[in-house]
Image 1 (cartoon, one colour):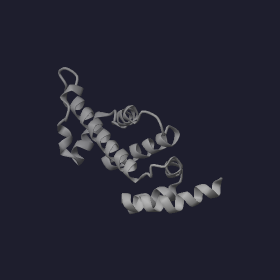
Image 2 (cartoon, rainbow, N blue to C red):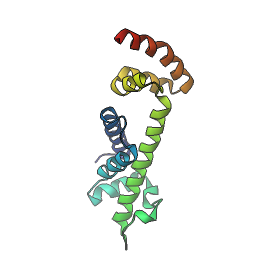
Image 3 (cartoon, rainbow, N blue to C red):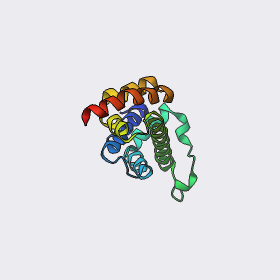
Length: 143
């Protein structure tokens, strides 16, 4: 059985892959799709995740539950919410780490070394300095 951490990490990779292909797409819809597709189908898998994180027994938005929701409906919605929340947080972190210039955004999404630099630094001020020096020179060299 896959752990909750593994599910979230796989979902983050899916989101990053989607962003590479759709930099101007609707991220909210995609996060919802990815979160939904990563909720385990089998009830035994949902129970295993509940053992890992007991707070999955509760949902944040009861409006997502069907009428007369059972235990497994609650778990499914709660797991969905957990994954979606982690993806929104990840998307915000990506946004904070990406330089606002179009060249750097494309480079970041398509170059693991560039991405790893930002993730390692995880500091907007350093990221801006890095982009203003390195990305300018690299962009000029490409032209």
